[in-house]
Length: 234
Image (cartoon, rainbow, N blue to C red):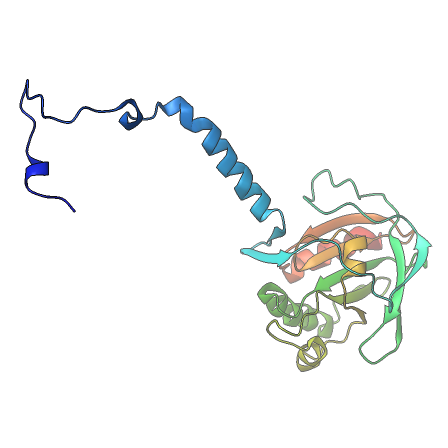
């Protein structure tokens, strides 16, 4: 509790004026550096468990880390897992053989991603991703207009399925959008991990030899989708 007498201004030469102890002195700026370094390290550790998933319009945050292998997805062989996607320019996955996988659709029919001699474009979507929710009707309208080259397959992968997140279940969502492309169900993200997914929507263009031609994330326009298809249809 502060009293009036304790707030009395100290006069010069007043022996009763309190003396500043060494501990009361201002901390030199340099001595705060270790604390700032420690604080920065703690913040880095805190964000290490999440990844900021960048799309063309904004960002989506999703947990990352080790996930159990989905028993409903079988590895057919082919290439090793692709490195995590960072940027289209100088993508180390270009020219690499895709990991071949086989699973099933929501209806239980077989769906495979394999080096079967046909070029293909893969589209990975998550039901809770707002960018995917906007992209799916754009792609479906493009398909309905007959714009997909007959020599190229479009295969979708429904991944990051989470009953606690919005727009669940994904099969009902895709049915509402009249989605006509084959869908491989990837409950635990096994296929997404093997293809190096880092953001939604996620596109992978594959040539007829089963090698990656291009990878890209974000919402694509119909013209950009056609350019991606043209890159593998040659």
